[in-house]
Length: 115
Length: 266
Image 1: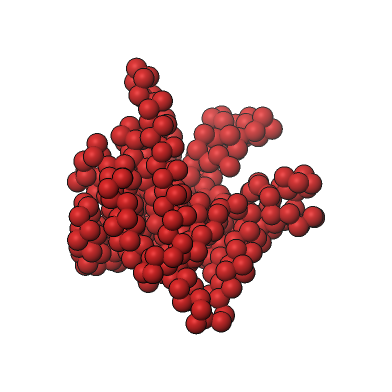
Image 2: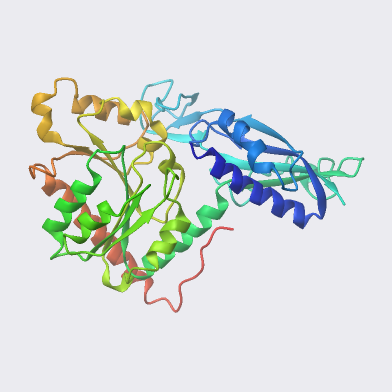
């Protein structure tokens, strides 16, 4: 539901990167998003064309790399894949785990054409 | 993981992404710029500023989150009535429309600032910052920020709070932590509210709610209470006393330093 405001924050950052690099247009924006970020990649894709209109990224493509959900067990030390509502150790079942990857909401890179 | 300082750039890929590196520029005048910033960096910066401001005054800020109607405002009314003589309390209220909740809080004799978000489904750090300017922080020990009733979006926005308290009323399903993991995983304390109704509800099992919470790999304590009937409130008050005392001690340690160093994340 808040994907449009996330998208607007994204565009503000992209515009800043474009300014810093004296770019006249942005071709591609790459994000890295984990399943626990609270942001739905598909909704972000829907919101992007609305948010990019009138900006330096008006013609940009949005690429979203979805990151895996991985936890490390504090009991047995194993790293296993997890689901958003099941973050326990996949090996021994202990819930004392640490999130290794999965809550990212990152602007990874911007591809731009210099003026 | 750290999403602000660029630590994802490893010795293995550094030469590729640095200026002049293979991936930094392609041959047709196009350039790929590695950024690696959190998308909500602007909000996070403002939240860090809010937190620093609160900490300078020794104020403990609690972000109260739940679905609409779980009893956030009723909990605050009962908490203020019981604790206003020992703690100086203030409240920031977030709702889409109306001053109703702020008026309920003011009727308890403490300051309340209403934020009406229009159609926005969550509070963000900038809204809270504006509200903070209407409060005299030197006269507050405990600040409650009652977020918009919503189990989805508020979880994604840091406001500058110290603790997240999430309410789950027993008239909802005990599997809510499994359905809304991002929210419940963020909780530092889970309150099972309206516990007086457990006697007439045969489908809400507090132990099951806690099991679902543990599946999210969190050690957050779970308390059962009823603000209306006063049951279980002492444990909640005890938690608040311990947290405010810890915050006050931290502020005291902060004060002797010549100046507070800026720890804003860029």
